[in-house]
Length: 62
Ligand code: SF4
Image (cartoon, rainbow, N blue to C red; front, side):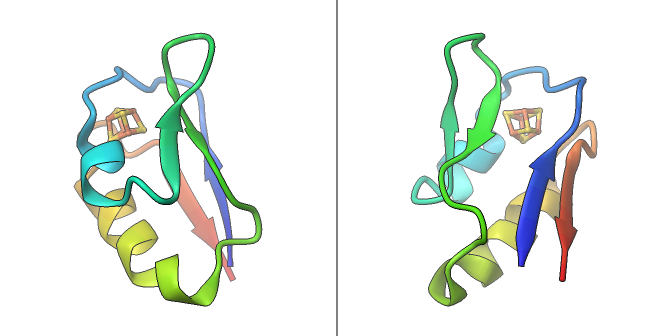
């Protein structure tokens, strides 16, 4: 699984809270993925974060 964060992140901290092993804040203050492809044990958390993102900018691709 690959994860992409599109433009429009409002830095709410939801994804970094739900799955801190996969999402962190980058130098621009917006969320960035830590691992790509996403390790198997982080897939569930990554999907959960994508669904929880209030501006729906996290995309997961098989
Ligand atoms: S949940 Fe969405 S808006 Fe919030 S920090 Fe993550 S990518 Fe940005």
